[in-house]
Length: 313
Length: 303
Image 1 (cartoon, rainbow over the protein chains, first blue to last red):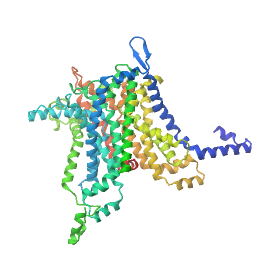
Image 2: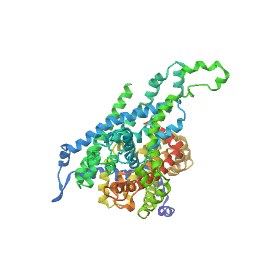
Image 3: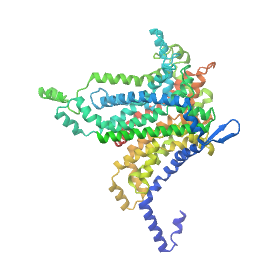
């Protein structure tokens, strides 16, 4: 505003120079003006915390003497920490079993819906997606109540059938969490596959029909290749999601007893407990960074693998 | 599909129900298989609705999928809103505030950024994209603990800003906006606006925004859901119940109601408040499906 009111008295050449600068700036760098707010936020919310965590991870909190510089001692401790590895192995195993089951279901459902052979396609599509809109806390509560043997359906089922099935024992809790996670995300992944299928050019199907291809051949030759890009994306996001499992094991212990959920059940739960109940922020920061690095490495590996497959195939 | 084609010319009446590649014969078997999966998806929601109509006594004593001895839904809702001096309304208002401010700002920033990436030249674009898209694969929870430690240092924890500021950042939204702006906005329309003398900001506001509406609705809706459903971030950032969102409030009630030795049982409150929490989201998704389904498609195809 101030500039605009001062502008008239200024000498013409200077104004011209200024305008020239503005034009050049506008042409080349105006993009930065648009992206600057995002950048500032990105620095504050992402980059700075990572570096700050890196700095904190070099310190240890001691009962006597407060924060002590410890070099890489936190990382050394972490690599020898059997509780940390217990969580990592549990989560890796969970990912290796749950993600393929969920994505297989998502793909089959996407194929079924894309086939146009269902009655009530729209209703089914929407209903399968709806769990995605339910917060993890609510889904854990519902499933916790339903599967629980104290108030839930399983108490009544066990009574009727004379069985003694408990979905929340140390050996079954992970399966129950798998049921919850699969419930929440199958529909979301289905929609991603379905979107990929919808983008297949119509002529391909007509050509296949003219050639007399049967349904399985159409699926194998046209539909699977169309979903390959989405498969890479969904695998990456599912791995990221399951690796940071936290909500379910954090909430469940307040609902069911003897579920086998420990304070280090998943790496994130461990980091949370270290930081907020054990006040070992330095160690928790190291753990968070190592988990982030592992997840990025796995996501990157999946992407490279997926791209190579796409190129070869 | 193709096997049904020869049947077509048999009779005129049949010809109307022509089975084509576009409109194949419906399959009851396939429908049943998918419907079974739909039951899995709906069962917990049905359970939630049924049990929100039961009194605490009925909840403990009756079968989970049958109604109680009397219809207590409205009693439960009244109790949810009056329990503990009506703290639930405060949590509801907090959640609305976090969601509306957070989703609006994050969608706006993603639209600005996505538009610039797609349509404006500037130095360092590739590096910017590489870093921001790379950040999507860093787990949100792994970054939340460092965020907490930093915000504690800045004195922001236990204020609404601690929940709002991280929610303003939506790298995946930026990606969706970038993809959709590249596809949906023809370069010559922008050139025409510029020749007419519109500045870059006016061009964006008057031409760009209008063409990015489906992606904008998608990004807004998905930020809306992720902020509404956010649990971990407010859990670590806040410890004053005054600033809790619904998710944390429900979890606190659940802990209270299940604590051994606690004489008060709150399960009817927990269940009814859970139902109240998900209803707005279900309505948003159902009423806006036309938008987000096409918006999601844009992202999926490019990805």
